[in-house]
Length: 145
Ligand code: HEM
Figure 1 (cartoon, rainbow, N blue to C red):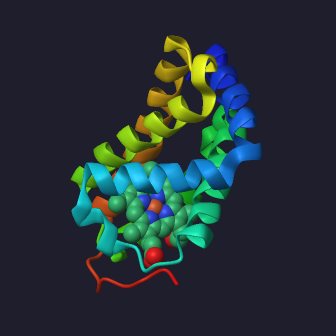
Figure 2 (figure 1 turned 90 degrees about the vertical axis):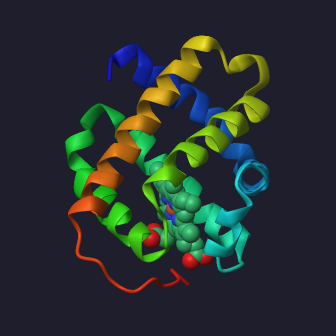
């Protein structure tokens, strides 16, 4: 990613951090509205799950300039997602819910350039997760909690 796009993602994420719990709640509501078949994949404690999600996004965001250092972490995450019953088609829906949430949370600060930068970051993240998932051994579907 170009330095200016990394900066846009990092600056906008700083504005989401103080409202992360509300943003996570908005995200899940939107996600389950877009695809109700996704809801049963989650075992219930969405508050806790939302914190794990925002923490992981935060880790990725601070490391965007040195992606190599977090590729193994993101690959592990992608392989665990196979166990949660996540399918490749879900990544598009999650991306849509994420962008929508950022737009709700950031309002006018979510400019067209910021959207483009987030789209690029999410695409990279989900491609790394999915390619690791595709190379992983099949196993039983489990819950993360
Ligand atoms: C690409 C960005 C994504 C990130 C950063 C992310 C992050 C996380 C994290 C940190 C966890 C906690 C458990 C763990 O670390 O293994 C988790 C669990 C989970 N994620 Fe994701 N995830 C992403 C994409 C998706 C997608 C596309 C789906 C599809 C619906 C999904 C569904 C789930 C489910 C079902 C769980 C387990 C929930 C439970 O057991 O209650 N995630 N995710």
